[in-house]
Length: 146
Image (cartoon, rainbow, N blue to C red; front, top):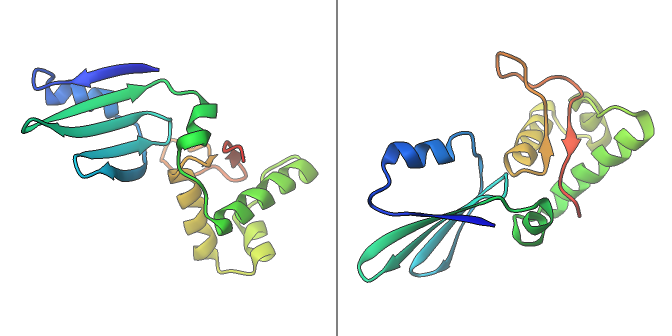
């Protein structure tokens, strides 16, 4: 795993370039002196207080296996959605439309949309996006291994 220590000499612009495009999956506070931001791509930004100073450590380059071992875990309901999407793809060869998911779980369209956005934000699925940022229909890919 590549590690970069961010000191007070590193400019805000340099840190910003390192973090651009990353999506926060989880924020934890393992100790009173530290805070960890985990990103969906497996990178971590750790803030630690030592001797009255705050150090920032950016860990990049984790493998998918390491991510799933210590990264965020889906809730029971999220697992149900992920399992349905996997089974649907295996059966039909394409990912389900949100209407298919809505029919299966008997929930409202906004509920399905919110769940899909949450799964994507937490790094459990990926979707293709068009030029305008809108999600491409039937482009869901499950990337979380249970």
